[in-house]
Image (spheres, rainbow over the protein chains, first blue to last red):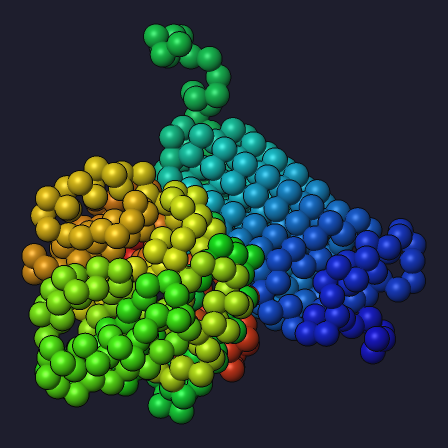
Amino acid sequence: MKTNGYIEFDLDGEELSSVHARLHSVKQGDNERSFRIVNPRGKHAVAAGLNAPMDVRIDGHVGFYCGGMNKEADITINGQAGPGVGENMMSGLIRVCGNASQSAGATGRGGMLVIEGDASSRCGISMKGIDIVVGGSVGHMSCFMGQRGHLVVCGDAGHDLGDSLYEAQIFVRGSVDSLGADCVEKEMRPEHIETLKGLLARSGVNADPKEFRRYGSARKLYNFHIDNADAL
Amino acid sequence: MCGIVGLFAKSPELQPELGRHLTAMLVEMTDRGPDSAGVAVYREPVEKGWTKLSLCNGHAEYPWETLSQEFADDFGREIRHEQRGSHSVFRIHEDFEPIQAWLRHRHPELRIVSAGDSIEIFKEKGLPSDVARNFSLDTLSGTHALGHTRMATESAVTTEHSHPFSTGLDLCLVHNGSLSNHNRLRSYLRRHGIDFQTDNDSEVAAGYLAWRMREGATLDEALQSAMKDLDGFFTFAVGTRDGFAVVRDPIGCKHGVLAETDEWVAMATEYRAIAPLPGADKASIWEPVPGQIYSWSRS
């Protein structure tokens, strides 16, 4: 059904698989690249595996893995998101206008995930290049084993932030309950403020970069350290 | 993997529809637990001095009328009973303990699935939609109810192993997760006089709460110590006469969603089980913080 310049799918009547067949058929340069999905009612993997530039707006709350593996698409979730939103996304933009459950942006390789509300535990777990901006707070074990990319938290962070961290960078404006193993606070130099300014501008989240602290890896856990030789 | 659902009617208008709404929630969680399903419904409390029992022996053709006559003969008082599928709910003008002793002696083939003032438990092996139909769950009214769909990981798929587990008078527990220290804990609790009907890990959690509360703990205190003594992953929902409580393990391994409107409070493993409720799209929705106890009560 086409209305007001976009194609609308109603998941109350339409099968998610047929909606996905349509979205997955979009190719670079197609004219019809604007979609709206209504009544998702917590269904899983809505708008997962998109593979071309397009706009998808979802009105309502989604279940697990919404927008997973996204490439190039711009997805807006006008509601709350379940576990694993944007997991393993490669590029493009996913915006959650509400809160997100656990493991948001898990293993993400690229693109940007914006969560305007709070994100739950393990946000950005094993992230590999994605940029995640959270307007609210994140739960425990966020950025666990983060390898590349940035996690920006405008609120507070839960326990064990950045546990076993590799080279992902973390910026937190509020308090941190505790840092995980090998995660340390680092100096916020002018180049980091510039990076953060750029991330906030791209995300559309309004915050002053100067109010943030920076956290990163102490690099003692993932590099061989002679003092740990006995542990072998 | 299992599914948990719970619904608490804040407005009296919702009470006649409680079974219908809970059934929709339960069936939505079929993917998470196609092995067996069950519900605990709190409804129509008996008067003082009476006990309500849910009994089962696994066969719908059990001679419940004869049993009712035997109850009447031996207790010499009015008996009321209502059969639902393979279970039958009896209302007897007597305390629980004498009835329990009598049943053990006279009818060891019967299992007491629940006992109390208002609780009724119906549970069975099979797809949630079949279980709901066998018990006509959609016709039940009530103040609040919990439901469970089971995908077994720790023990056999039988009606006895399915949830909810009764944890004492008007108390029950449903569990999503698995416990690893249940064998040792079961032996310990047996030595302290707690009965178990199966080798199921979740029944140990139910027995643990019953034991703590028998020793004088409140439900909140019992749940607090459960988080210390139970090793494993869990989201628990515990039903009480006046409401229910929800708690997730401190690591937050298992999912859970809570939602509230002016008419109801609902909990479920996934939001899609809450979505069919009236006004769900406008409800306040949040994820329970791991290790924090959430409870609702009428009193």
